[in-house]
Image (cartoon, rainbow over all chains, first blue to last red; front, side):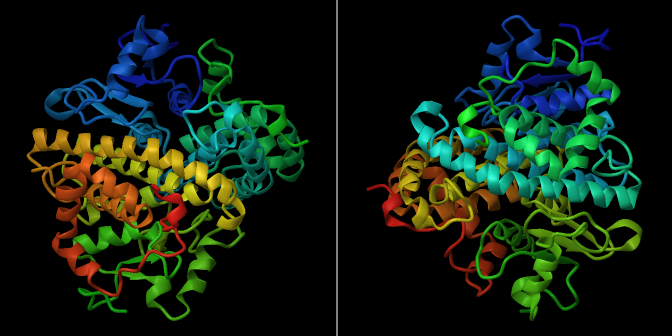
Length: 265
Length: 265
């Protein structure tokens, strides 16, 4: 599919699994919020997923274009940005977000602010991993049904202890920024949208899907983070357009899954 | 304790738990390899751990010096490097390593190389988390003994599936670099030591401690990574001196623990 603002070949190529938001979504949101065109290879190109597999899931000594191997998707390919004019291929979600940050205008101008965005995003991605482990606490390659007993225990701990700890942290960061940068409570670092906002928004959105009862209860505890902040990011121009487009994919068998038995009872 | 090269007040302050290598060790190794002095606050200062707790484990709206809160240690404090001449406080291991990378000479000169170091380090730190979860698969705040049954299953999966997958990846990166940069098989990115080498070295060292039987068997499969590369990093000047000093702490109740029942039987 053509991107909304793309009349020429996009400069950036996202290499990720098709059909799920997953970890690719943090990168998509950065592009969509900034209005910079990108190619979502597995979604936009015929037979695109075989390109993703070739770059990110091969067992050889390079990903492609002379770059070292990638452990797993997502990866970013930037034609012309690598060694000697070849394409650059980099992987790991927070690494890709950092690379794109200044280029997409999704980081603050000051150095301290940039590092504060990144520490927040790394912390949020830790929570993302913990949420994944609620349905796969023992083995990533086995079915949920084969580790359901352990998943019930893990999910209880994540709901009761980890989610409130992270939500409290994100909300304290939000309050700190409201007081120090005049972010009006709508931004986590500085006074404009950064990829800390879009990344944490995505995780909150996934949590609302996966643990709807738990999050409904937590909303009373964190009304500004789960209300004001969440709604505000959702209504940012690029994000709003994206969420109403077909490019936004529904949650399914990815990180955020709704198993009623894992939610608050 | 005074650091070997420090005659003046060190520029960098590491805020971490005392008495364990833990995640702080990845940062210590970067300093030690480069010979740049640092203050290991909880180890070097009387009552230093209360400073760490004050900055990294408080429930308020800032860590200190006007910086946003820290989720958990390690953090780095750099007097004078923050907003308006105050101290900068940043957290998250890979974020700190990136901040220090160029400053300590622990990153390659080319941009592609820097991002390839970081993707490798982020991948290695994912393995570090998976190893932690072998003894704490259900709840980080509960005792190992209270989740031992699940730990036996988790450890089996990590040993049989995850460790070989990561080792194969690191070794393919090493081989790729040997062919493309003349790293002689001793370096993972480029032709000098980077924090990708020290970080992956630390994880291999921890694995040798935690899963000694498993790793003895894997050494036959990955002789260059677990032999040539491992020994080579260990003999780098700054690392060699550090490992024979009292500053290098033994593994104990941290990420890498040796429970014989979790090792290969």
